[in-house]
Amino acid sequence: MGDEEKFDAIIVGAGPAGAACAYILAREGKSVLVIERGDTAGSKNVTGGRLYTYALELVESGLHKEAVLERKVVREQIMMLGEKTGVTIDYFDADLARTEMPQSYTVLRAPFDEWFAGKAEEKGAMIATGILVNDLIIKDDKVVGVKAGEDEMYADVVIAADGLNSFMAQKAGLKKDWTSHEVGVGVKEIINLPANIIQERFNVGADEGAARAILGQTNGVQGGGFLYTNKDSISLGIVLSPAALAQQKKKIADIYQDFKMHPAIYQMIGDGTTSEYSAHLVPENGWNSVPKQLYRDGFLIVGDAAGFCVNTGTMIRGIDLAIVSGVAAAQAVLGAKSRQEVGPSYVRELHELQLIPTMKLFAGWPEITSISRMTKQYPEMMNEMMKFMFTVDGKLPEKMPSAMKKIMEKHISLGQLIADGWKGFRAI
Image 1 (cartoon, rainbow, N blue to C red):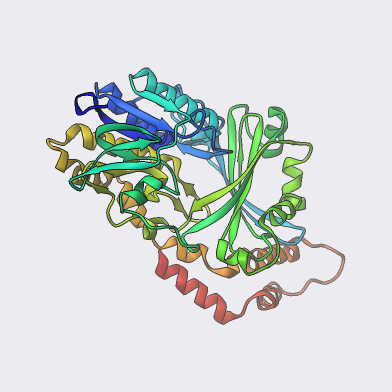
Image 2 (tube, rainbow, N blue to C red):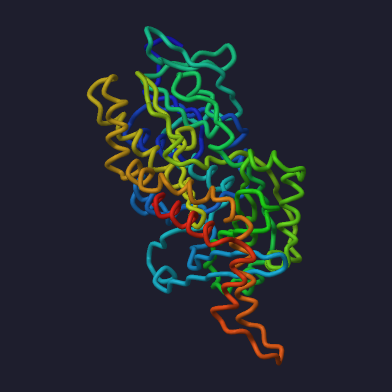
């Protein structure tokens, strides 16, 4: 391909970030090539999670109404597991159930990604699937294209949307290999259940759903679980620290199986059948692991490739931030007056769209989720306290203050409680 045949933009990866960027650029008349390693967009993804609708609205007003989504989230839940017990905090918001544009939906990535890439294609983007990009073309210290096998393709700008282990960002010299404290290793599963059973078990309506963060019963390994209700399936999984996992003998698949069979979990998924199962790495360190430089001449990093993910333990955001970064990249390409201005313009757009301020706002939260006692002692302590409060056996109960004090001291010391509280306070 000669320079006269080059694209305005080549996007590597057809996930949410790449599709959002391609959609806007193609809509505005730019020639766009999206190269996806999978046989179809989304074919490498399992389960997904949730999508906050504001992000799709940044791409095109009303786009969320067309999207392949599952259930609008009306119940936000936090669950803490003891050995055979569970405590669940359930927040229900009637306004979320009635609003014209729900705040968020659960999604299944494979169908969602395929739909989103298809929408970009409708706008004029060229989607090339089943192709592995294995190098960048760099001339005079500028990225001018990509190589896929023996083929060379050229563009004014190359946008890396190739996920967590971004080969393109590493080739561009903007990103190093992840360390074990920056990522989590996750096991995810889709469990099929009839829609009416899901609605009964989670007390939701026909198009409503729940999002649940889960602490405890991960064999003492730092991390946690999640559960999302889809139309006729449940997305269930755990994400654990690789470093903590390596310090004990149990495999993550075995820890997940024990987690899945916990009485409080199994009653929600019982009689279901597994349709998909996978394991992969998840960015866990937030702003602290975002590359200091997000661009070089002719090259931008978006989505997971840039580490744009927030995990507070109760809220996980990745898909929306990926889409926002794709929007920012597209607007930078469209608005820049010269090639050299694209990178700085991209960073300005990330600020204006509140992505970088959001990442910085939650920068300290990995310090909280890394507190080792969050995965064992605190959930078990909470469950034992609840058991005391609800036990009636005909015997004279102990006074509440002294009973709670004994339960706390059984699990943690006062010094540990103060230290963890201070660490949490400083983090936020």
